[in-house]
Image (cartoon, rainbow, N blue to C red):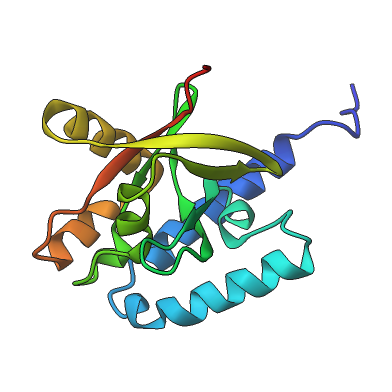
Length: 172
């Protein structure tokens, strides 16, 4: 029997290959020094696609964009980041490829009550809870199932990589 044209198996297979390739590329030890260029390329891809596509989506990886005011300037900053789905929310790590500095967005979400999270064109208001103890361990395992390179990032840095659970703002 002939396959229907709507069969998504070849697309899923291609995404699986691209995801594995992205994980391999992400494990390259020299890659972090090119992070500013990767961010610039991602911004161009997002701009050209009217924010419908980013590098994470191309790689078949879950990604969100947070928009949060700067804690000092109050200016809105948008950051696209790898995530792991967690029920009705998301898990994120302030890894910055295992660099020595904590990313600015971490300080910004610590300083606000709530902020916007966009996923595939849908924006929701979210709150962040910084995780520790067993909650952090569970979240770390979930993040590793999406991006095993977090283990390398942890080994590259002396700092503790902050982990957050992002959840919808509770209804009033």
